[in-house]
Image (cartoon, rainbow, N blue to C red; front, side, top):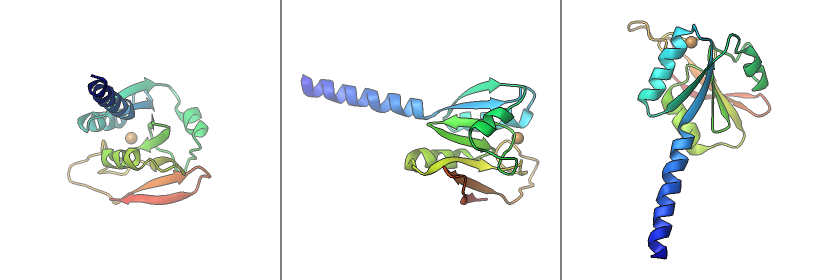
Length: 144
Ligand SMILES: [Cu+2]
């Protein structure tokens, strides 16, 4: 009986932690169309999105250590990491799986054409997903 209970509790905590980890809060302007498209991309990849509309997302970005050079349109927060701009869902999943302790978040600065939520026909511009560490140092996390 107690063994069965342990198994059930384990399964329960496992599923609930997955659900929590997959929930992302996204700060964005209410009129941002590409932000909504990116949210749809995340939802299609299994994330639960809590969208928070605000007129100016800049204070949130500054609070998280983002600069004009590393910022984009919307700002997501998941599991203590920021996700800035049109970061592909795959990279967020990798981040949550690896849980690097020195990384503050991922960013795709600007709004590259062809990134998730920025589709324009067949055009795909090359872009990098950048990782920012807790001291603000940038490294390349993924190339597209
Ligand atoms: Cu955008």
